[in-house]
Amino acid sequence: MKKRPRKGNEGVALMLVLMFVVLLAAIIVEFAYDAEVDASLTMNQGSDFEAYLAAKSAVAEGMALLAEDLVLFDENGNPVNQSASLTGQAADPQYDVGRADFSPDSWSLGTAFEQINEAERRTTVSDEYGKINLNALLQYNPETDELERNEPLIETLKVFFATRNETDGETEVDSILDWLDYNDDDNTEPNGAENDYYQGLENPYSCKNGPMDHIEELLLVQGFTPEMYYGDQTLDPPMLPLSETLTVHGAPSGAININSAADEVIAAVVDGWSTQGYTFNFSSGPPYLSWQTLQGEVQNTNNQADPNNPNGRRNRQNPNPGVNPDPSNPNGDPTTQWHPFITWSNCFRIFGDGRHDQTKVRIEAYVWRRPYEQDQSQYVTETWSPIQKQNMQAYLGDPGTDTDTAMDLLDIEQFRILDWRVIR
Image 1 (cartoon, rainbow, N blue to C red):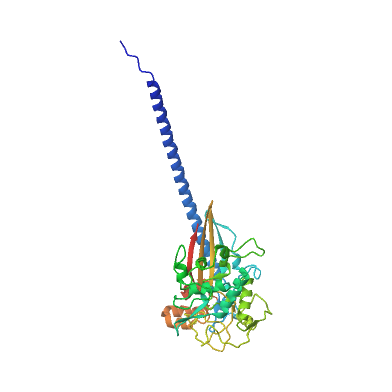
Image 2: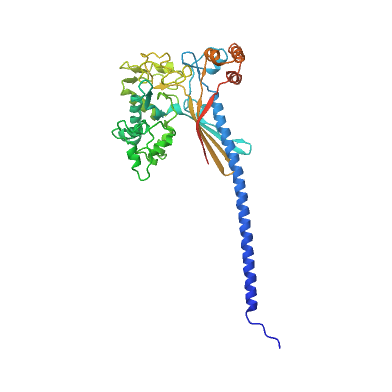
């Protein structure tokens, strides 16, 4: 006699089959999802690489734009026109103009996005000599091994912050000075802060006590907030980020390129230097084609010597004599009046933007552009081999030598990258 199967076995089997189907479907869906993610990551990596290469190419293009506008100095440290000098013509005054309203073809306008391989690139250049150099607020004196205050520049910065923040500017400048000075043993500025303040914060860190490496360090300095740093683009005129008016890569003496500086920077320089006995009469008006043209429009009513070089030490602001001496004091003359403005620049910020599909990469590079010297005889005599000397002499005597060939003959590093970073 056969036994009847128990009721419910069919249901259990069906449940097992359904569970197996569901599990298998989940595995398939997970596999398909992982495959899609991997494919997307691979594609993004490819896009990122293409955008990165485009950004690097844009930085190189920025250097090429600046190379075409390279400043040449004569034996007295005065800038002269590169193309005229290299072709044996009369040396015309040279200048850098970084403002679009002065020069429609200025390199400061950058370039529009253009195709490169499968990506696009864009170059934007700004002049760091057209900004207030925070690292020039204190000047090192090797004879005393001490830091000395650059009073005209300090007053300039106070005026700048007073106008921008509607304060007296004292707190901002004092805090920066204490951040820059070498140690905590000196006297703290009245409104500044030293290491004990920063170590007492909720998230403590050390006071820099040295030159700034990046302008963004201001966000670490007492009293500086993101709102102060990034400005307000909704105002009319807009309040620019501090990175557009302040720098740590400017002229070592603190001089400002009047042809590329923003109006608010020029106004601050005029007001700040006026407190030190200087008067300004901009009869010609920018752009200034040479420093000599600008020189006669600034008078020192106190007949002071160069405040950054009172003893005529030519090498104090320039560790490489003969390359770029102070154009207002090329011979180290202690009676020569120093000047708050210059008309040329050596350091620039280049934004190289690259994009591919939806991926965007920006490279921010600060580059030093080495100026030529018209008189290369000392350099040739002291450092070059006989073959190099012969080639250089042939170059100097051949007006038809082009710039690229001259660079090969000179064998000098034209650009040096001081700092750079990739932003994705």
